[in-house]
Length: 255
Image 1 (cartoon, rainbow, N blue to C red):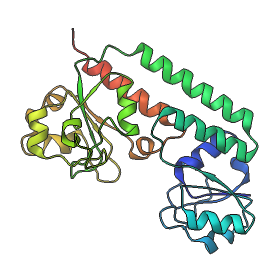
Image 2 (tube, rainbow, N blue to C red):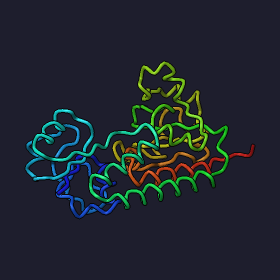
Image 3 (cartoon, rainbow, N blue to C red):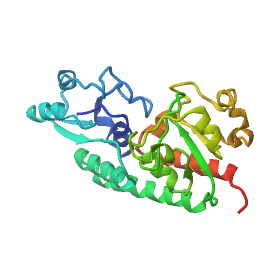
Protein backbone atom coordinates (compact mmCIF):
# COMPACT_ATOMS: atom_id res chain seq x y z
CA UNK A 1 0.00 0.00 0.00
CA UNK A 2 1.66 3.17 -1.25
CA UNK A 3 0.87 6.78 -0.42
CA UNK A 4 2.57 9.48 -2.48
CA UNK A 5 2.49 13.12 -1.44
CA UNK A 6 4.86 14.28 -4.15
CA UNK A 7 3.62 14.79 -7.75
CA UNK A 8 6.93 13.83 -9.36
CA UNK A 9 7.12 10.75 -7.17
CA UNK A 10 3.57 9.82 -8.15
CA UNK A 11 4.39 10.01 -11.86
CA UNK A 12 7.48 7.87 -11.33
CA UNK A 13 5.52 5.23 -9.37
CA UNK A 14 3.02 4.81 -12.18
CA UNK A 15 5.69 4.88 -14.89
CA UNK A 16 7.53 1.94 -13.31
CA UNK A 17 4.36 -0.12 -12.99
CA UNK A 18 3.64 0.23 -9.26
CA UNK A 19 0.52 2.36 -9.64
CA UNK A 20 -1.86 -0.48 -8.81
CA UNK A 21 -0.59 -0.37 -5.20
CA UNK A 22 -1.19 3.36 -4.72
CA UNK A 23 -4.03 3.99 -2.25
CA UNK A 24 -3.75 7.78 -1.94
CA UNK A 25 -1.89 10.73 -3.45
CA UNK A 26 -1.67 14.42 -2.58
CA UNK A 27 -3.89 17.14 -3.97
CA UNK A 28 -1.47 18.00 -6.81
CA UNK A 29 -0.84 14.45 -8.02
CA UNK A 30 -3.46 14.38 -10.77
CA UNK A 31 -1.26 12.77 -13.43
CA UNK A 32 -1.59 10.17 -14.77
CA UNK A 33 -5.35 10.26 -15.06
CA UNK A 34 -7.10 8.13 -12.47
CA UNK A 35 -4.74 8.64 -9.54
CA UNK A 36 -6.53 8.43 -6.16
CA UNK A 37 -6.32 12.15 -5.42
CA UNK A 38 -7.12 13.15 -1.84
CA UNK A 39 -6.81 16.32 0.22
CA UNK A 40 -3.42 15.19 1.54
CA UNK A 41 -0.87 17.97 1.28
CA UNK A 42 2.70 17.57 0.16
CA UNK A 43 3.50 21.11 1.29
CA UNK A 44 2.14 20.69 4.81
CA UNK A 45 1.98 16.92 5.35
CA UNK A 46 -0.10 15.60 8.23
CA UNK A 47 1.19 12.41 9.83
CA UNK A 48 -2.17 11.21 11.12
CA UNK A 49 -3.87 11.82 7.78
CA UNK A 50 -1.18 9.81 5.99
CA UNK A 51 -1.30 6.93 8.48
CA UNK A 52 -5.08 6.75 8.12
CA UNK A 53 -4.50 5.13 4.72
CA UNK A 54 -2.44 2.36 6.38
CA UNK A 55 0.50 2.61 3.97
CA UNK A 56 3.52 0.32 3.80
CA UNK A 57 5.45 2.94 1.83
CA UNK A 58 5.23 6.74 1.62
CA UNK A 59 6.88 8.67 -1.21
CA UNK A 60 7.49 12.29 -0.20
CA UNK A 61 9.84 15.24 -0.14
CA UNK A 62 12.15 15.62 2.83
CA UNK A 63 10.41 16.43 6.12
CA UNK A 64 12.31 15.18 9.13
CA UNK A 65 9.37 15.24 11.54
CA UNK A 66 7.04 13.33 9.23
CA UNK A 67 9.78 10.90 8.23
CA UNK A 68 10.50 10.14 11.89
CA UNK A 69 6.82 9.64 12.63
CA UNK A 70 6.36 7.27 9.71
CA UNK A 71 9.45 5.27 10.58
CA UNK A 72 8.29 5.03 14.20
CA UNK A 73 5.04 3.59 12.87
CA UNK A 74 6.94 1.03 10.82
CA UNK A 75 6.25 2.68 7.48
CA UNK A 76 9.00 2.81 4.86
CA UNK A 77 9.83 6.17 3.28
CA UNK A 78 11.22 6.92 -0.19
CA UNK A 79 12.29 10.52 -0.77
CA UNK A 80 11.46 12.52 -3.87
CA UNK A 81 13.40 15.76 -3.56
CA UNK A 82 13.99 18.47 -6.15
CA UNK A 83 17.02 17.44 -8.21
CA UNK A 84 20.07 19.50 -9.02
CA UNK A 85 21.19 17.30 -11.92
CA UNK A 86 20.06 14.61 -14.30
CA UNK A 87 21.95 12.08 -12.22
CA UNK A 88 19.74 13.10 -9.28
CA UNK A 89 16.64 12.40 -11.37
CA UNK A 90 17.83 8.97 -12.44
CA UNK A 91 19.00 8.05 -8.93
CA UNK A 92 15.61 9.02 -7.56
CA UNK A 93 13.78 6.84 -10.08
CA UNK A 94 16.04 3.93 -9.18
CA UNK A 95 15.52 4.52 -5.44
CA UNK A 96 11.72 4.56 -5.81
CA UNK A 97 12.00 1.42 -7.93
CA UNK A 98 14.00 -0.26 -5.17
CA UNK A 99 11.45 0.80 -2.55
CA UNK A 100 8.51 -0.57 -4.55
CA UNK A 101 10.30 -3.70 -5.76
CA UNK A 102 10.21 -2.51 -9.38
CA UNK A 103 13.98 -2.40 -9.84
CA UNK A 104 14.01 -3.69 -13.42
CA UNK A 105 11.21 -1.38 -14.53
CA UNK A 106 12.96 1.62 -12.97
CA UNK A 107 16.19 0.76 -14.78
CA UNK A 108 14.26 0.47 -18.05
CA UNK A 109 12.64 3.87 -17.49
CA UNK A 110 16.00 5.51 -16.81
CA UNK A 111 17.50 3.98 -19.95
CA UNK A 112 14.49 5.02 -22.02
CA UNK A 113 14.69 8.61 -20.75
CA UNK A 114 18.45 8.79 -21.30
CA UNK A 115 18.05 7.47 -24.85
CA UNK A 116 15.21 9.82 -25.79
CA UNK A 117 16.90 12.87 -24.25
CA UNK A 118 20.15 11.98 -26.02
CA UNK A 119 18.37 11.75 -29.37
CA UNK A 120 16.55 15.05 -28.87
CA UNK A 121 19.72 16.95 -28.01
CA UNK A 122 21.79 15.30 -30.73
CA UNK A 123 19.24 16.08 -33.44
CA UNK A 124 18.50 19.67 -32.38
CA UNK A 125 19.86 22.55 -34.48
CA UNK A 126 22.88 24.44 -33.18
CA UNK A 127 21.56 26.79 -30.48
CA UNK A 128 24.79 28.64 -29.78
CA UNK A 129 24.12 32.35 -29.86
CA UNK A 130 20.44 31.93 -29.01
CA UNK A 131 19.19 33.38 -25.71
CA UNK A 132 16.09 32.54 -23.69
CA UNK A 133 13.89 33.71 -20.85
CA UNK A 134 12.06 31.13 -18.70
CA UNK A 135 9.05 32.72 -17.02
CA UNK A 136 7.92 31.09 -13.77
CA UNK A 137 5.03 33.47 -13.19
CA UNK A 138 3.66 36.77 -14.46
CA UNK A 139 5.64 38.76 -11.88
CA UNK A 140 8.71 37.81 -13.93
CA UNK A 141 10.42 35.39 -11.59
CA UNK A 142 12.83 33.25 -13.57
CA UNK A 143 15.56 30.62 -13.20
CA UNK A 144 19.30 30.80 -13.72
CA UNK A 145 21.66 28.19 -15.10
CA UNK A 146 22.44 27.10 -11.52
CA UNK A 147 19.00 25.46 -11.18
CA UNK A 148 17.90 22.10 -12.55
CA UNK A 149 15.59 23.80 -15.05
CA UNK A 150 18.57 25.87 -16.15
CA UNK A 151 20.57 22.66 -16.57
CA UNK A 152 17.88 21.33 -18.89
CA UNK A 153 18.22 24.33 -21.20
CA UNK A 154 22.01 24.08 -20.96
CA UNK A 155 21.80 20.72 -22.75
CA UNK A 156 21.23 22.73 -25.92
CA UNK A 157 23.77 25.48 -25.28
CA UNK A 158 21.15 28.21 -24.91
CA UNK A 159 22.18 31.44 -23.17
CA UNK A 160 20.10 32.31 -20.10
CA UNK A 161 19.35 36.05 -19.90
CA UNK A 162 18.57 35.74 -16.16
CA UNK A 163 22.10 34.69 -15.17
CA UNK A 164 23.50 38.23 -14.74
CA UNK A 165 20.54 39.13 -12.50
CA UNK A 166 21.70 36.63 -9.88
CA UNK A 167 25.45 36.69 -10.38
CA UNK A 168 26.01 36.78 -6.61
CA UNK A 169 23.55 33.95 -5.93
CA UNK A 170 21.50 36.08 -3.54
CA UNK A 171 18.27 34.93 -5.20
CA UNK A 172 19.35 31.26 -5.02
CA UNK A 173 18.89 30.88 -8.76
CA UNK A 174 15.41 32.40 -8.87
CA UNK A 175 15.72 36.14 -9.57
CA UNK A 176 12.80 38.45 -10.22
CA UNK A 177 13.36 40.44 -13.40
CA UNK A 178 11.71 43.63 -14.64
CA UNK A 179 10.07 44.69 -17.88
CA UNK A 180 13.03 46.96 -18.54
CA UNK A 181 15.48 44.10 -17.98
CA UNK A 182 13.58 41.90 -20.44
CA UNK A 183 13.35 44.58 -23.11
CA UNK A 184 17.07 45.29 -22.77
CA UNK A 185 18.05 41.61 -22.86
CA UNK A 186 15.69 40.88 -25.79
CA UNK A 187 15.74 37.05 -25.63
CA UNK A 188 15.41 35.04 -28.83
CA UNK A 189 12.99 32.61 -27.17
CA UNK A 190 10.53 33.10 -24.31
CA UNK A 191 9.34 29.98 -22.49
CA UNK A 192 6.14 30.45 -20.48
CA UNK A 193 5.87 28.08 -17.51
CA UNK A 194 2.85 29.99 -16.19
CA UNK A 195 0.16 29.13 -18.71
CA UNK A 196 -1.92 27.17 -16.18
CA UNK A 197 -1.19 28.96 -12.90
CA UNK A 198 -1.37 32.47 -14.27
CA UNK A 199 -3.18 32.21 -17.61
CA UNK A 200 -0.25 33.52 -19.63
CA UNK A 201 0.10 32.98 -23.37
CA UNK A 202 1.90 34.37 -26.41
CA UNK A 203 -1.04 36.73 -26.76
CA UNK A 204 -0.88 38.10 -23.20
CA UNK A 205 2.90 38.52 -23.50
CA UNK A 206 2.51 40.57 -26.68
CA UNK A 207 0.07 42.85 -24.84
CA UNK A 208 2.60 43.78 -22.13
CA UNK A 209 3.97 47.31 -22.33
CA UNK A 210 7.02 47.34 -24.58
CA UNK A 211 7.08 43.59 -25.10
CA UNK A 212 5.65 43.80 -28.61
CA UNK A 213 9.11 44.95 -29.72
CA UNK A 214 10.86 41.85 -28.40
CA UNK A 215 12.43 39.54 -30.97
CA UNK A 216 10.66 36.50 -29.54
CA UNK A 217 7.27 38.19 -29.89
CA UNK A 218 7.93 39.43 -33.40
CA UNK A 219 9.38 36.10 -34.56
CA UNK A 220 6.69 33.92 -33.00
CA UNK A 221 9.03 32.17 -30.57
CA UNK A 222 7.02 32.65 -27.38
CA UNK A 223 6.59 29.04 -26.30
CA UNK A 224 3.65 28.03 -24.10
CA UNK A 225 4.66 25.20 -21.74
CA UNK A 226 2.60 23.04 -19.40
CA UNK A 227 3.45 24.30 -15.89
CA UNK A 228 3.11 20.85 -14.35
CA UNK A 229 5.43 19.13 -16.82
CA UNK A 230 8.12 21.77 -16.39
CA UNK A 231 8.00 21.73 -12.58
CA UNK A 232 8.22 17.94 -12.25
CA UNK A 233 11.20 15.69 -12.82
CA UNK A 234 9.59 12.38 -13.62
CA UNK A 235 9.21 10.67 -16.99
CA UNK A 236 7.56 13.72 -18.59
CA UNK A 237 10.88 15.53 -18.37
CA UNK A 238 11.36 14.17 -21.89
CA UNK A 239 8.29 16.14 -23.04
CA UNK A 240 9.79 19.35 -21.63
CA UNK A 241 13.06 18.73 -23.45
CA UNK A 242 11.18 18.00 -26.67
CA UNK A 243 9.41 21.37 -26.35
CA UNK A 244 12.78 23.11 -26.09
CA UNK A 245 14.11 21.25 -29.13
CA UNK A 246 11.09 22.28 -31.19
CA UNK A 247 11.47 25.89 -30.07
CA UNK A 248 15.14 25.93 -31.08
CA UNK A 249 14.14 24.54 -34.46
CA UNK A 250 11.78 27.51 -34.88
CA UNK A 251 14.29 30.09 -33.67
CA UNK A 252 17.52 28.75 -35.17
CA UNK A 253 19.32 31.36 -37.22
CA UNK A 254 22.10 30.90 -39.76
CA UNK A 255 25.60 31.03 -38.26
